[in-house]
Length: 529
Image (tube, rainbow, N blue to C red; front, top):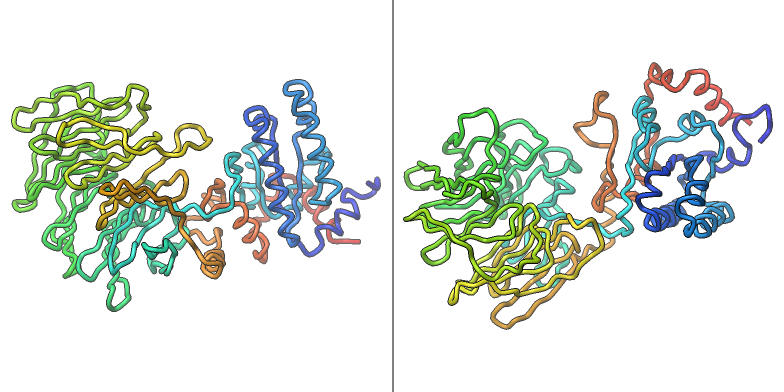
């Protein structure tokens, strides 16, 4: 490096006419991840090699190598070899200097670990994507929150994108991606539930503010606004009775009755007068005319009469239990619990509870034992939320039986397995979110199949037309900061979006936060010969 230059000529050649993404790796991430940290770095380098229009500016922590040598010496050779390959293959810039401000001034965006450097990027309004060490795959993870069978297809909504997906249930190929005209396309959890009523598909609001109706015949949307956008899911559980949709609160106080055919709200009923919101769990029981729902993290059951539009609140006698779901079986109700390796039976007439036998002692007592459960030929199948085994309740003997083992996968142990399960014809369809696949079961013939969703290249390319910078909630008070995920906040998508941005927004006054003179000197030197 020349003494009169603070920007080497060979670096200028590398970044000329290109966008630059600053890559920050930290000692803390190294020590916590170890082999996984290095594996992730190699994966990042491989991804960037596929995008020559973007330059990776890697600035390892000054103590990274010495920390490896002293605290995890078994990784020293692997780390040095990786660093050597990075330089020899000219993957990007390796910045070993002490000049942090230069990298911030020249780069267009940030990727990497959380550190104090992020605050400087926020100050100058440059986008930030936090690294997720666990992500080493490029497949699109759908994070299906709900699905329904209608018009001989599977329709589903996803947490990652404000789009209505349509899938062929025989081939598992996506046949349509219908953009929802309300809200930003990449806003997460805009719609959370989905139901079919006659010729309509209805989307229940998650964080969005609309009940959305899609006419299957006329292929058009309409909506009813029911409140502002929120950070939490408004409505989770629901049922349909006489063409009316009953929406139960998840982060709200209201039960809403919506007439699907006439597209109007019949009424809103407050189930709680207090200011804090009511969360009724998704796993409910519908025994016409009653809806039974449990209040999350409590021992209360709400019993709603859909004919009289009245409700009562029932307290289970054991105060130490926290409920997560309810399902009627014969003359009793099954109650699932939170953080407890136990399933209860409840007699509504006597208000007595007792334990159901058959659940293995080693079955993990996570937040919710089960994400969903389905009745099939009178038996009940329990699909786990954070465990690796599906259970069957044998109605004849009233005992739980292990039914289906799920392939385990490396992770923290808190990953979600099944989000939804439903009976469709002779099959039970369940979405395994952890493995990003459908698990379909035919209990009559003991057939179990696993299928990934097939998206043709043309449709996949279409998804990348949407930019993660087009979020409606981004503002001066809320800078462009995301966390890497397996959806549309993936590294590959981030790189493409940075590459096609004409300019990264800059507030001149905020440049002073990293030193105006340094900023101007470095920026000028980068573009001059």
